[in-house]
Amino acid sequence: AQSVAQPEDQVNVAEGNPLTVKCTYSVSGNPYLFWYVQYPNRGLQFLLKYITGDNLVKGSYGFEAEFNKSQTSFHLKKPSALVSDSALYFCAVRDGLHQAGTALIFGKGTTLSVSS
Amino acid sequence: DAGITQSPRHKVTETGTPVTLRCHQTENHRYMYWYRQDPGHGLRLIHYSYGVKDTDKGEVSDGYSVSRSKTEDFLLTLESATSSQTSVYFCAISELGTEAFFGQGTRLTVV
Image 1 (cartoon, rainbow over the protein chains, first blue to last red):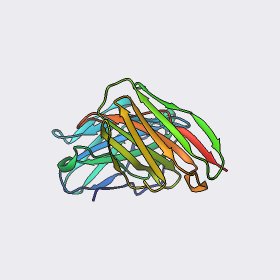
Image 2: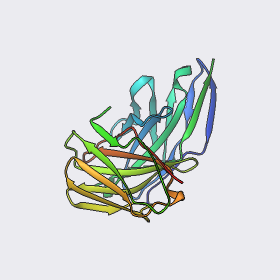
Image 3: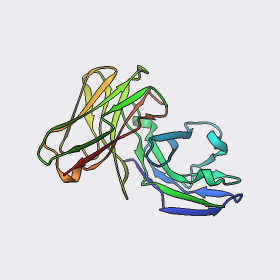
Image 4: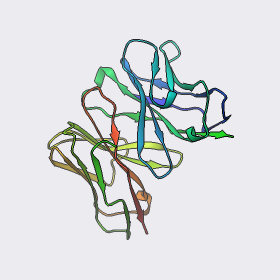
């Protein structure tokens, strides 16, 4: 069965510092991995995805994520945090082996708080 | 936002009444999903559709049914609403192998 774990409920970082939001996954086939961001009272916005290829994926708003197959991780990173990055972040996975007709499975989310 | 419209955006209903939420897309995507979002649980899949009249259950499907008679519309029905179904409901769409795009959500309160 597919699963996603986001081990931190909340991450606090000062503006200008690098940030990392952690995600680990479990799938039976090749993983399709995604990061989404949710601002208050809004839907989820797509940030970036890993399907295949380069392990370092670049996405919207200066975010990037590193796929690590041996550690089954897909951590979200940004070199310099902004106060406006404060939001709820979700990691999601789809099992590439069974992806036809299957949905994304989400982690429980991590609240990122960036202080000025 | 992708062409996804959820209606209504807010609803308050009484326990035991039927409720239908609608998701309408203008992107002609094959796959449509209904999720619910609750604090501490993230997003959990209720039902999804992989084509007209083709649907399947998700993780938390008890108490919910869905229908998809047209590519663009995916309906979620609570046959008899309960307080445990108070939640924020999100519709999403995707194509095979692509990211999903989400609607703005429907906040449902069952009193």
